[in-house]
Length: 443
Ligand SMILES: Cc1cc2nc3c(=O)[nH]c(=O)nc-3n(C[C@H](O)[C@H](O)[C@H](O)COP(=O)(O)OP(=O)(O)OC[C@H]3O[C@@H](n4cnc5c(N)ncnc54)[C@H](O)[C@@H]3O)c2cc1C
Image (cartoon, rainbow, N blue to C red):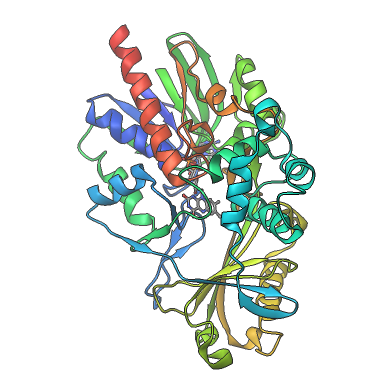
């Protein structure tokens, strides 16, 4: 069995949060070992570079939502740039593509004005259908529900209305401007990994963690390295495992077993959910949507078809490219559970062609397609987290360190308003590193 020397810290997970924590620890001169089950860094950021295609194919995170200060700071450090992803929104209404009704402002104002959530949290469905019945038209209520399902990947029967209202009326609202890192998210992760070179922090991929035995001042991590038994000890660990992995039943073969179990995290884990997303990237022979109907949709950034299996699509605007992303999240993604790759791509194509009244033979124009199933991915188990009814404190509880020994990072443990995003993951990693360093100073 391979046993490493005692490190100051073990970081479990080399996604955006784990790598940020590692880079901060490296800068502070700590020794650390960063472990990840995959053969690559990045976790739920997965930029694929296809020969002959100028743009990266982003199978995970793609946009920067709103202010996202930690992401812009990282872009600056990597001498990168961000491009504005704004453009027109078109929706299928009464069988015809029309410029989307701008209902966001109406929804936001109604949300801001209401007092009901101050007293009691409700499910998003109950809030919209019962409490905003008189304030919003039925179309605005349906739009709000579609946004919660599509943007937050939430099951609106379970999702906390309070959490969604707070998010939509804050920095990360659906109206906030959106950007993309130029060249994709990949170079930003490379920047973080590059910051480990020449430091006392080592990165070890292909290491699946199976168990974490811990007590004050001591952690033993066991698992496999390249498929062979592996174990390592440390004084403390940062756990940056995805929420969906932390929620696996203890007997599931891909569960990470903590001994003693994380009893104080149970309530938090119950009040958070890992939202499902199916994202399909379609590459066509040409960007036919630029020219159809006399070029009406030439500046389209988003297309919506509320009733379709894949209700949301986006183009690569401002870049002119024959790529379309098909997006199904929340209940729409659940409906496609168990479908194989070709069925998923088929559903995405059928949904896209329905936008144009099936006048275009999209199958014939398709060159290639990429899908990553984040729900069945054993190292993700969902796309990103949302809060369920009554879970006001859940993120804080999840983030709380245990006995100055286990520290928690990851988008689900961000408590500064960016949960669910790369920015949230980055700032949770920095927060966990600060907690570790403060604990080390206290000793
Ligand atoms: C389809 C999709 C689209 C998204 N779009 C956006 C977007 O446009 N903008 C945005 O800001 N965010 C987006 N997100 C969310 C964003 O990707 C995540 O919030 C962020 O990347 C999470 O980082 P993390 O470090 O918390 O978790 P992760 O990136 O999941 O890192 C956790 C790491 O733990 C590792 N791990 C898991 N189990 C084990 C184990 N047993 N042993 C060892 N290692 C293990 C994983 O391999 C992974 O590398 C999207 C996510 C998805 C899936």
